[in-house]
Length: 466
Ligand code: 4AD
Ligand code: MG
Picture 1: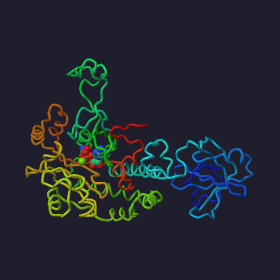
Picture 2: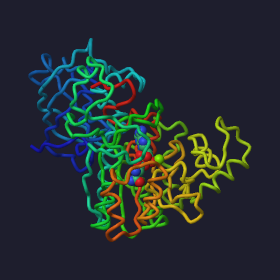
Picture 3: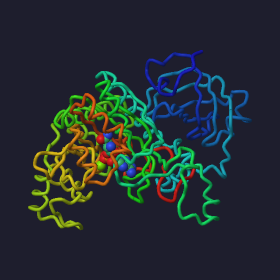
Picture 4: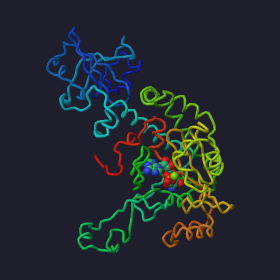
């Protein structure tokens, strides 16, 4: 007898095998002829396997007929060809072992469809549904492809710190980490906190990006990438923001902006191609059941076979000013583009992923390379239909004098960033990189509308359940 997964048992190669399966009951139906059909799922794929439990099994009355939705079980039996619709195989059980029951009265995931909002309240049970099982498998495939893509190209995987004292993006949206007793501080009504008594001797935070540390490794090892959790205390209650999300940040020495754009495009296309190839059943589900226009697969196929649009910020502003669309925020050169502007460009105007580059320097962080025009920096964002910004990156300022000038302009202390500045003192080199938001890319390939439904346990303002 061979222990196999439901995914394996559903293939024709399994026919004739004597197997053991382990999983959970999705449905049970009793036939008048004295046997039962049990649909079993074990998470290995979207589809269930149908198990036929004969009334002659010794525990048929005592155990099999008590198997309710959500109960766990082990089944031993023979895989046979199935005459049923939509399934190549089924299992003729020789033994059914009930493992853990699920009270039919109180189990929340009964047959009735629940909304995604309702399922968020049951984040511990939602992976048992078709939608969340499919999201988990696609998320896993994307993570595997991310490592494969960079490993095949000779990038080193580096681990940047999760606790840090520097605000890479300069947006001040950081979660503070402290061992100071807040209750004591409140009681003493202390106006000034003495960080000498804090764990790290100074204010420290959860990282908003591993970029600055990744640059140090790129400037020694050439090509590196990070892949880790990222934290932002921005009070954004949108369908595209999380307080805790995962980011992939490649960083390359001897790399300039056009190289960076090409890498971002190749990287995204690889991820899209891999889910289309390796997650066919789940992608068909998203196409039919989640995507409103049922064109998800077609759209992704079109994207992997065409070039992304590349457009400077200035050209984008010209397009937005010339179009007759009414925006909530009027467009003006120098402004940070709002999501309505980004979506107009990528969804309406081009209907394609768009790489925007050369942004106004006043709206971008201190580390971006300053162009000779004195007005723009070599930043880039990749925008995709339906989601908007999916990647943010730039060529880095590698010239010592320009970097120091820019830090002064932004009132950053060169002493605080002494190690970052040192990279420009010793063997400086043009370099570039970007950050891809993992949950945004999962949203894009699944067409799930809310980012809270593509991460197992979402963290958002006012919500830290589970
Ligand atoms: O554009 P961002 O802020 O870029 C950086 O952090 C750079 N230091 C990256 C680099 O150059 N190494 O963030 C990168 C990406 C965004 O494009 C978006 O996909 C995602 O991270 N992201 C978020 N995802 C979910 N929730 C949030 N609150 C996010 N903020 C950014
Ligand atoms: Mg950004």
